[in-house]
Length: 66
Ligand SMILES: [Zn+2]
Image 1 (cartoon, rainbow, N blue to C red):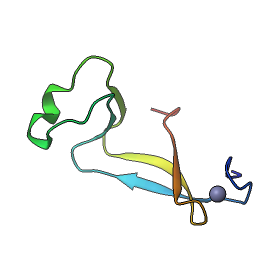
Image 2 (image 1 turned 180 degrees about the horizontal axis):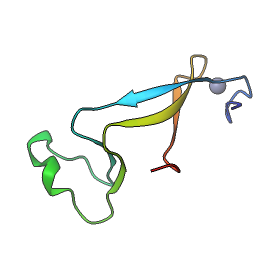
Image 3 (image 1 turned 135 degrees about the vertical axis):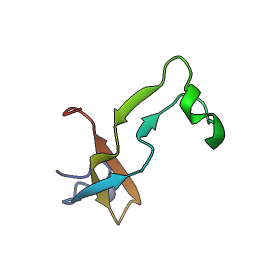
Image 4 (image 1 turned 180 degrees about the vertical axis):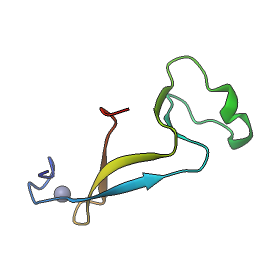
């Protein structure tokens, strides 16, 4: 995958979290993660594929397979 910022090839890898990977519109307290609010997006139970650009310090997460 090419970086959409600098167009260089990104490095593929994974982001892992024991308690699941979730996008939320607002910052959540870690202790409240089991009560994720409306609009939250559960990305994966513990692992998502992600592409990293070291130049731009960006990570792109692909959650389509979950
Ligand atoms: Zn880049």
